[in-house]
Length: 94
Length: 248
Image (cartoon, rainbow over all chains, first blue to last red):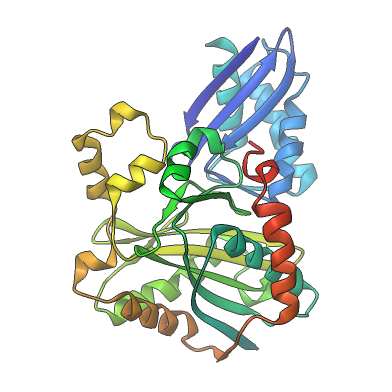
């Protein structure tokens, strides 16, 4: 199945996710007008969410992103792990 | 530290993005001096942020029809229409150590150059986090930054005049939103230097030059042969490619 969702981060930018999934997330792309430094690390954030169950909680998904951010020394501006997690949940439930 | 200023010039979108990347590479290797450049886009172009989808943000067919370039930037942020006559773009490239450590703080510091420049024209403006400058409560400048291996690049535009209708034909806002109401609402949120007086684009350039070089030791310079050669490679091999521009 394919799902997508857009979420405007309060005080931030727009984040969009496009997801291919069955029981779990097979493929995910995160788009938007936010900033991620270094830019290449968006791939690590996407990777951290692959394999997550579609029933997983928003908090659990956010924690995965937070961990990727910490391990990768990534800085996000205009978007947060919580906002990405929220968009993911919207994409798999809409 | 001695800065190089490359004065106002015009290039296509692919060169404009390529030379910025060349400067990131070469300032890192200490092969090129820290540089401030001013430029316009010829032909007019749309640039999208690093994480945006070209198909989703840009009416590519319409761009082709009107001879407008479209390119993905190295930096994040949103889609921008760079009208050949409607704005001046700048890039500033230097070691990160020249700026405040935090990204948010460094935006503010670099944007001060624009604020100081506009002030010489009598236009009062202020920094609006994350990355905008507003005058009279409306956006007049958007900016974007990246850092690579110890080198900071910030580029941004200052609006000289506005053609909102053309902007909307090129940027994909859902068609039903391009009603007069929507255009009015953008006019209420965006402004340009021309709204503040009868300034020429050269006056705006002079103002930005003054604002950005204030307190800096600098001299005017041209691109070196090596810089142009490398920019030529990236123009054709990366920024002009479908692979890069449609990667999302």
